[in-house]
Length: 275
Image (cartoon, rainbow, N blue to C red; front, side, top):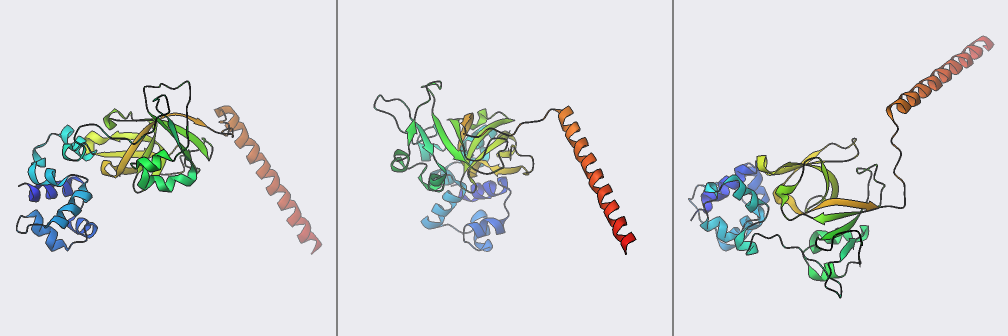
């Protein structure tokens, strides 16, 4: 059995201290230490907790020496490609088809996004979503459209309908490209992605709006990734001014400020003279 070495290895790989992991698992740090050192044996409820925490099956935690896996194998395991869980190396997506057995494009409106966090794998939930087709998209690929809000994705207008192509293999993420990323903690976000999966099992997410700071997500937090295809909006994005126009605009603002300052100075002098 490899349970002790596996949980210690996985905890350190995720950059977690014993205190942090113990708190997440609702355990005492000394209890977790006992499991990691092999001096205590967990019951079935504890095994289930560890399985959920690492998103790895109990069988794998017990029977496979994870420390001996290659980096690519570890990456697949961390992305959910656990044969004991999935039965294959395919990422399963709940989807719908029309009467002609063609893949629908499901619409996830703003009011349905909260339910998507728990219902994304539920056929009944997905089956209740509105659907449509775009004739210029391939019928051999899977697409889904999400209504996204907020100013973090400017210049794409708030409330736009963003369509993505389902990405099966996350190693195919191209750094610098736009993706719809669904994580348990943050929900559905539209970001420019930096792919660091081979390096440290993480993605760096950048907003289109530079006001927002980039942040990292561990692959274990990610549930779905959709490659950006297009967006639909009834608003035009704000124009991007060429450099010369920006310089001219700044110069005009500076001149206006100088005139205002001069006017204020004159008004103050007049008041002083009257007094």
